[in-house]
Length: 506
RNA sequence: GGCAGCGUAGCUCAGUUGGUGAGAGCGCCGGAUUCAUAACCCGGAGGUCGGCAGUUCAAAUCUGCCCGCUGCUACCA
Image (tube, rainbow, N blue to C red):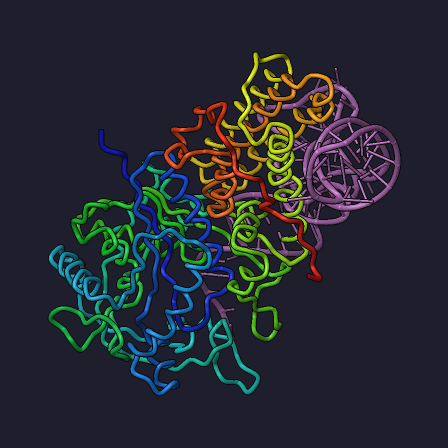
């Protein structure tokens, strides 16, 4: 029997600066989903990468005195290094400058053209180079000296250029029908409502080429034009699927920031419909993570380098924090204090302590040999019930992409296990009833094993260490091994703390 | 301006179709304990459920208005 497939992507990052926490957040959460699906028996393909064309890159390269390709080659390195530091389990890191991608985008263009959806027109308006966008007269604001500025306060100039257009307006009904038939296409619900309202309000045709710069993929048959960056960028998901008729297409899940939901839920499906291709199943718009509740900006001086955070707190602490503290789909905020507090409470005091206290008793009292479980008494039944409920909540939450709720469920299991341990006080039993002590330890160890197996998507590296200590063999670490306890009599390695408490001044 | 959503303990949030004394986690305080990373376990304090006015036997939960915040979107100069 072949495994079911699951194709998941992040948005691709624009490497005109250093990666920030937003990138880290997106790749971590998507990685969690990818790992969860693998453990749950899916054959997963996970795509991430960089969006390397466009005017801003061209200009930045010029400013740096480098050809654009050489420039992006340099700029991409920190993104790849960050992915490595974060333990991102992607199957391909796509770059829109990859040769197979260029070929694919041109083939996609030709299919859309063959369908009669592309036509040559003229684009004019107030253009902001910085924003890489046109604005209507009415959107402009006046600068201090009376000059016209974009809503973002950047300079604009009146620009006229020939452009190819995509007949987006022709797709309004089909998009609305898509939303109607597949409300799960856009998540969370708040984004769905916004996008449906946007489309219902009417669509204008979309300019999809530029002549004002050359750093992009040429339009087939009209080499004066390069393709509009979004057409180029969105098509990366097809390239990563193996091409126009790639074996991995359609994607099951695009994880993107809430700021680019429109491109993924309006333009992208319209492009695909035009090319006669299947549509992705779900686009999930996550929120933004803010530093102490404030947007990061250079002027505020609160720009945080996620690689430095990894260095400081450790990958798994950062991964845990981002998934646990921020409701997936909502905005959230982070701070050093919050990370320390959260991870000490959950990891050091919770999961880590549970593992350490039970393992060390087995090491000291039973020579590190996995004890035999006894008949389930009332206490064991309650533990089991808590775990069944917790496990069910965990899987429901994970499948609904409610990562934070899944961790909530996981912590309820940790609490139940710690409660079971304290209630049965095996340290007291060590003096009165060693057999019963061994049974309590066995039950606790098995509870811990289940918790750690379920935690793997979130903290792959430290859970691997814990599973080693718990004596769980490699082939029993996915979810199919959940109900297979470690055999009694197995020799466990010497336990060592995996989640030490941390303090800020260290 | 329009549409949508939000405002509940110090913090982050749950609170089905209105109805037993308003909850969870974290933080804080106390107790108990010593297996464990001064952790775990038990208990406690903390809230006029944004404001005002209504509907109702009864509203955090419905209606109206107001204040504050967020998102999407439009328009005027």
